[in-house]
Length: 212
Image 1 (spheres, rainbow, N blue to C red):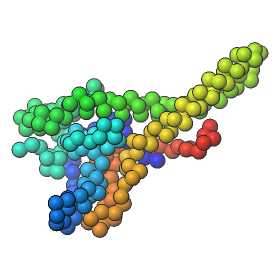
Image 2: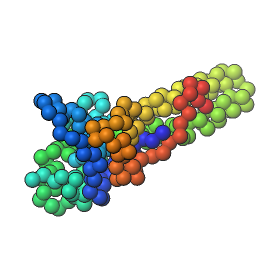
Image 3: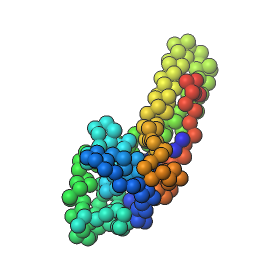
Image 4: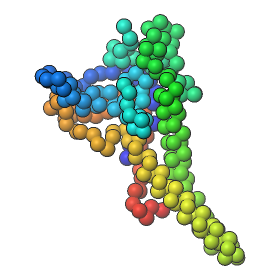
């Protein structure tokens, strides 16, 4: 299972377009390019770096610097408070303002991902051993009431771990509903761009109901 990093850092290389779909006619012909664009830009906004998973709750909203001709990491840095800080460059500062890269809602979504993933990863990583410790302690105490309390706490923690496993899947680096074919007819191009692929977290999860 591959999930997004807690914080997506701006890429230090140019975005290389892998897809070259043929032109489509008609008013809604552009919709044929949706899959190509999703893959080329890592299912993320090329400007503010928010992923589709960050925007799912509220829906995605929709010269300026172009990430296909300007490496974003040269012009923007991610601060500790989840803002994309523009470099001392007129074009970068104009781009930040024009695209509202630090709109309060976007900063909030970056922070929410970081906080959610940190909590869920901690639960998934440390929770099972804590459950076992609570059960072992319940077996040693002399009071039945104390044992029941400990077992109830172990059960509640196990449920939280199960919920974390379910919730963390919304942040798959490659969304579950991905279309593995696109208008280019080049299926081997349907892969994450290197700049995000190098940042994703590898996570092995037991998603069975009886997860320990």
